[in-house]
Image (cartoon, rainbow, N blue to C red; front, side, top):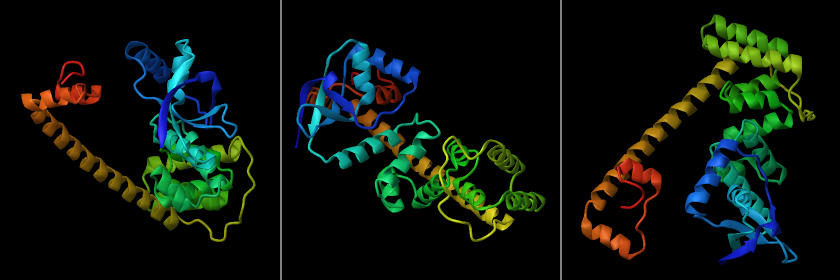
Length: 291
């Protein structure tokens, strides 16, 4: 059960704070200034019942603070602190403006709270293989490789291979793969730059003890297999994107036909559903957000 009430912003503690893109935040502030707050934030009561812990809605709360508001509508839910922490992590991961290492830190946070790779993958919508690679790199303190993975420079499978190998083995494997024409030249150059930076500047900002020793040398064949896996994963993402686009086109077309029916529009208005989200209105060519 949940309830929505006005609560003092000063009484809210952000459970899982995160930095945000300044431009996007300014746009949010301006939108709330013009049309008001459309969705309440989500909180839970603290153990002593005098304060609240924010689960979802940090941007909305900070926007109201910038607009000199002292209270905010909030949905109060009953959940454990651990459940709320996971909910907050999942909401952060669902956002598109995560920086390179934010996603990594969120996955690491779930790992530190005792969740398995499969459980993390289910919660955040990534493959188990991806989460396994990220956690393996985290355990070795490979922030430079992780940053390259999240920026799309090096596939996570290849990054994991590099982390297990010595420098000499990596160089040999890359040379063999290049001479055999099994990896694109730009991919080889990108990996070489990452490896050189890693050797010269270190694995990353933090120093994390390596948890286990490598048992097998990295070979050109292993790098090729890792790259091929990444290619297949990317192809699957493209297929899913095409499927989603087709469904969206169908939904927009169907909505357009329904909105052309006066009786349907009158029924929507009678039910208090007389507005459309701006993105859908734009796709339908509707002026403003009124159907």
